[in-house]
Length: 405
Ligand SMILES: Cc1cc2nc3c(=O)[nH]c(=O)nc-3n(C[C@H](O)[C@H](O)[C@H](O)COP(=O)(O)OP(=O)(O)OC[C@H]3O[C@@H](n4cnc5c(N)ncnc54)[C@H](O)[C@@H]3O)c2cc1C
Image (cartoon, rainbow, N blue to C red; front, side):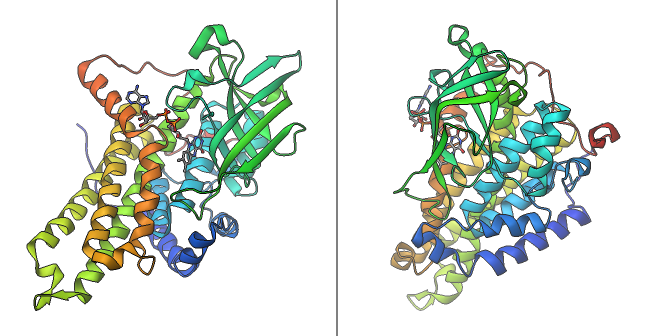
């Protein structure tokens, strides 16, 4: 018999309160200025590290807080209530990079890369997208040529979050182009390696308080020890990384919906038309009701994924569904929040225009809306099934062996 328990644990409640207070204190007073200045405040990551939030679901023996996967979702939800930029940072650092290292890294790689990342001493990023290859990963052009004890990596990545901030970059390149998906391998490129450089992207619609840019590999010598998994396992590693990244994106979308709801409820109290508060008009209530319903639906989908992760069960289908539904709902909530605010919502005097600009990127990254729509149809039609992976994310509570360094 499956028992569903919807009550948050005491730890969940404590972490939510901790991150909420942090966001109110450290992000809320500054975010409008950072957004306008296109400034990514790296100090926020250091402070999150001090709180143990940069490796919240990584085993303690690997430098993390050892909490369950739903705790990561709570951190992401509360952070995105402040701004998408900081949730994106945790998504790539913890979801896409550290959790992948936990799942696929050798013991030596965990010691070298995961431990400092989980402590927040080093920052991780994830480089999959290229100028000519986004949704179609196998369209990538980056090449890693084997030279005995190292690979020579050439090519570039684009739209990489934390490109100018991160220390460790989990990147993907062909080691054998003829094998298509089965010829892609995964590597960690370290900042400072000769031939490796980064540059920021300017002129973004949203996530302006975040850092996004390009990675350039000009014949970078990458030691064999920095290859994650076997040669040719890169595509599987990238997709399993996305199972974790998408979980955090979906959780963050709940934070956007929550922020839209909070802002709209406050405005409903203060604005009057036709002799009554706008919250008393049924068509305004319809928008409020939709936000409230979508917050609940999205949270439930995310919680189910967290529950599956805690049990060590593959969750690609459920994660895709949660990401697709919650990100679309967040974008709709942001649009409706502007509508509730009328013309004032169209100005930066209120935060809701920022929510709308921010909410667009998650509908595009970590699988576009169209890619998730196709995935869900294919699962429903029986065209897609998930085979067991060679390496799985460890179930929670972590077994003692996962914690033995
Ligand atoms: C702010 C931001 C941060 C990002 N951070 C990262 C990061 O850290 N690391 C990283 O690797 N990438 C990152 N990305 C890149 C992101 O993952 C890609 O943009 C995304 O995968 C889509 O790829 P694309 O932009 O090349 O669009 P394309 O793949 O070119 O798609 C263009 C359009 O065609 C549609 N389309 C494509 N194929 C199909 C199909 N088969 N059927 C129907 N429609 C289809 C798409 O849905 C989309 O609407 C980031 C992007 C943004 C905006």
